[in-house]
Length: 113
Image 1: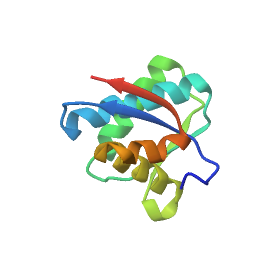
Image 2 (image 1 turned 120 degrees about the vertical axis):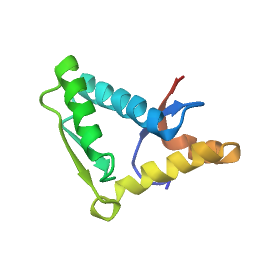
Image 3 (image 1 turned 180 degrees about the vertical axis):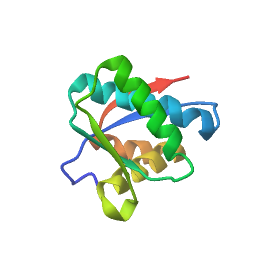
Image 4 (image 1 turned 180 degrees about the horizontal axis):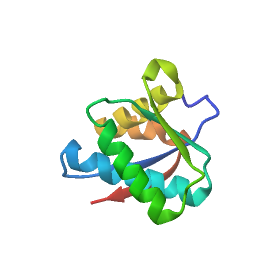
């Protein structure tokens, strides 16, 4: 994976359940994407969260003025680069040497508590 020409940013949310961590990390991602002038954001589809994701993204884009950012939810098989984010997240959640192994593609790391 580290041989691929990809770079990732990692947002770490500690000591919170996924239900609270996801909006924090997704909100931070959308803020950064809007500020950086990103044109398209691909998000892994979870139908149980999609409505809340859309609301959150719309709120952030209104606040940040990122109206040019297009986003869509897709299944992992529809966009293979989603596998990279899953693998990096797995490495960070398992810690230790796994983080070291994935560091070559980690461009930025932000910890939010």
